[in-house]
Image (cartoon, rainbow, N blue to C red; front, side, top):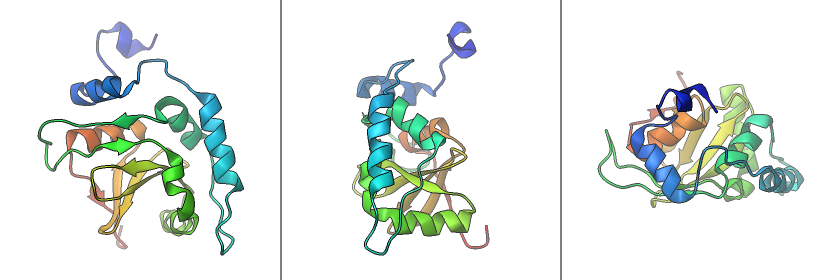
Length: 167
């Protein structure tokens, strides 16, 4: 049992905790078998131009805990509308070059994490340090320093930071 559970607090903000539990998440959820299937599928994929996905522990751990969850939202957001999402890295299977290019700009490797399902068509990606990003037709967005923070940003409607050339 983690310290925050013993202290009577939760790991997530209340709205996120409720959305995760409704999606089927529970403390201790860990499906490494499915995470390894996704890792193998991404590692084997080569784009027509020869680009490959990077696969690393931060991504595999996020998939093991949250993979396959379709996380819904309800109510108003803190700054913007909350965003429902699906944690399924194969949603970014054909984006090896885009993720590689953004990773190079961020000086890290990126791997697909899932997708926003609220209509924008954004793809979610995670870097080797566990930071999470959203990529859509309007730009690239920083969602959080880790999967917990990114999920909270999306589900609570917290305004993400837009990535820019100037930093």
